[in-house]
Every structure is written in C-alpha cells, then in structure tokens.
Amino acid sequence: MTSRGSKATARPSSEARAVARTQTLIKGENGIGTVRKTTLPGGLRVVTETLPSVRSATFGIWAHVGSRDETPALGGATHYLEHLLFKGTSRRSALDISSALDAVGGEMNAFTAKEYTCYYARVLDTDLPLAIDVVCDMLTGSLILEEDVDVERGAILEEIAMTEDDPGDCVHDLFAHTMFGDNPLGRPVLGTVDTVNALTADRIRRFYKKHYDPTHLVVACAGNIDHNKVVRQVRAAFEKAGAVKDPAAMPVAPRAGSRAIRTAGRVELIGRRTEQAHVVLGMPGLSRTDDRRWALGVLNTALGGGMSSRLFQEVREKRGMAYSVYSYTSGFADCGLFGVYAGCRPSQVHDVLKICRDELDQVAEHGLTDEEIDRAIGQLRGSTVLGLEDTGALMNRIGKSELCWGEQMSVDDMLSRIASVTPDDVRSVARDILGRRPSLSVIGPLKDRQASRLHDAVA
Image 1: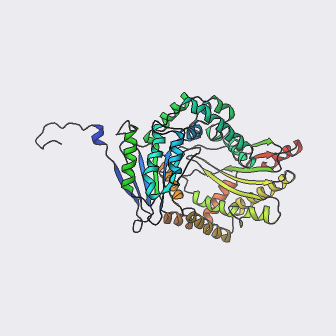
Image 2: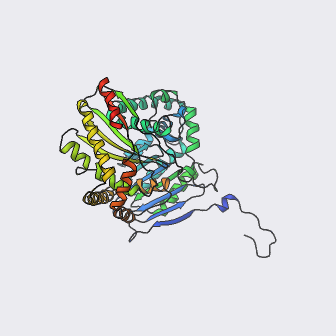
Image 3: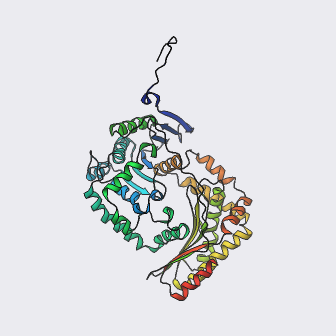
C-alpha cells in the first residue's frame, strides 16, 4: 500500500489481487436451506447448502468434463479416469481410500455423464473433514499408474459387458446413436471394447491434467455444515496438493451453443435373442436452458411419468401389453431428447409402437386436458420436493446447478415455475416436440419381416 504522496504505484502481484469471493445465493429461514458460494483464488468454486436438522453431510466435487469432450480415440476416457481416481494417490493407496470411509460408516462413489463427472462421499457431520480430505486428495493427487490402468481395464470391460447384457439399458445408448449419430453425444459413456483397449496410461494422464484443473471443478457440500469451515478445509487441501497453478485464473463458464438435431425417421435395430423387444421411440427435445423446459416437464409427466399417465394407462392398464412403459427427457447444454420406452413381447412390438405413436400424434394435435395438466403439475411439484429430502440430493442439485447453469434456484422458485405452467404452454410445446417425425431404436429377437415393418412406425 502506498501513501497519497507517492508518484508511482507498484502493481500488485496476481497472488495479492486474487482473493476469495463469497456470496449468499439463497437466503434460508433461520439458516435452514441457505446456499452460499465462495470462489477461491485459482477459480475453484465452493457451494454449500446448510441443513442443521440432520446429522449427515454429503461432499462432492463436480468436474466440467464428460464423454462429449472425448475425441473418437479417447472414447471412454472420462469414465476410465473416474475409476482410476479411486486407485491411489501419493498419500493413500486404493485400500487406504476405501477403508478411511468404511471405518466411519461413510459412503463413497462417483458417476460419469455426457457433460460432467461427480465424485462424492456421504458421512456423519462430525466426519466431514475426513471426507473432504479424502475426496480432494483423489481429485488432485491421482497417480494413474500403468499397472492400475491395466488392472482397471478388465473391470471396465466387464462393466461394458454387463450393460450389453441388459437390453433395457443398452437400448438408450442405441437411441442416442440413432439421434446424434457418430459424434460425442451419440457415443456410449463407457466407450467400446476397442476404444477402452486402446487407451494408455499416458493418454489418460494428459486427459486428467487438462480437465481436472481447479477452474473446471465445483465443490458442493450439503447437510449439517458450516460454509466457512468447508471453504477453509477445501482451500487447505488444494493448496497442500499444489493444485492451484494461477491464483488469478477464473472458472470456466457453463457450456453453451446451439446444436440443432435434424434427425427424423431414422431406425436402428439390433437383433438379440431376448425374451422381450426393447423399444425407444423419440424425437429432439429441449436444451436444459430452454425456458420451455418447465412445460415439457409437465407434458412428460402427464404423457408417461406415472401410473395415471396416458401411456401407462393405454399400454399397460387397458391392454396389458407391457410391464414397463414410460416417457423421459434428456437436456444437454445445446440440445435435448424426448423418448418413449417400452418393453414387450416381440410379437406385440408393432401394436405397442402404434399405440405409442397414436398417443403422441393425438397430444401433438389436440393437447392434454386441463385435468391431466393439473394432475401432472401436482405430481411434478410433489416429486421435486420429495426428491430433495436427503443431503446427497441437495449436494447434487447445488453442484449441478453451479456447473451447468452458473446459478442457483430455490425450491420455492422451482415450485413456482412449475405451478406457473399454463395449458397453452403445454399444448404449444407438445406441438413443437411431438409434432416432429420420430426416430426409433429397437433391441430384440426380430425377424426380417418384422424389422422391415418397423420403418412404418416412423413414416
């Protein structure tokens, strides 16, 4: 600091200019539900939600990387890396990592998606410092040894085989490929046998160093916690690991873009000797930032989101032609999907598809009734609240919100947005989404004659 009489002012270093910035994003009542965010020097963001009435806490770190960030030669690298971060650091072996949480009755896991990866631990509130230390150590100090890469390759190939043995799961990967084709969003998160076998320790290390920089990470913690303590412990862990390379670095922005899906009428079939035919009929949906997503959520709930939904009533209750039938939406940063899944006897696949297509066309042309919309709004509001009744769900909400939207929305605001959806909103989005020509993916024991007829379902 210089005196007023100084003629020249020394420019502060980046370390001096870079300070932690803390904001209260959502003000809860009596501290309950308060969401706070601190951005640390180096670009690491720490978001917390306080829930003093529980005795647990969930701590997670979200990485701004998913399978859509992979080149064809790196297919499956994000998921492979998820496995390897549990294999050991310079401070802990794989056994040390798992036994540390087991010793306090904690739970630890991770998941990889197309646009993000998350590592988390759920523990008693008194054991939160341990969870923070272990998870931060994994994210900043993974060794990625060649012998670990070789050992884990076998486990990942078994996971791929397990998925392929479940056609009800595999058909959704097929549908993504049907809609997106051979680009990252159309490829499986796990990769393929060929791409996983081709990955080397050196390639994975480079991928790790590129995408696990603090600017690409969001720390999220929810439960009976103190925000300032969490921030201090996280900051100490990252500084101890030497993970902060540039104190003046800023966090990466949420993904953006405007990818248009022009796929229509595509059909992809995989013949398998299964007891059921597994079917997904669908079309392009909405991105996760589209304001119409609230209306689409109501439409999805009414059409195939519960036992009173149209598809469930028409396919299962009235005709008994499927045990599982539902609709779903997937929203990405720049595009989305809307799909209808059904599992049925191969001999009935054409009838099931006709019923589903007829219902989609009916709703696209005439919309839903006011009664259906009111019921769907009530169901969606209730399921939203009930789905946030544990610290893990709260951690997921605030972590994903910061990473994907760069903002937080209170539960009351979410409920208000759902309640504000009008019948005209739902009918408008139904025309836009369901009025498009669908595409179709099927896995099952289909004969040539049946396969040729399936193209009629999307004509």
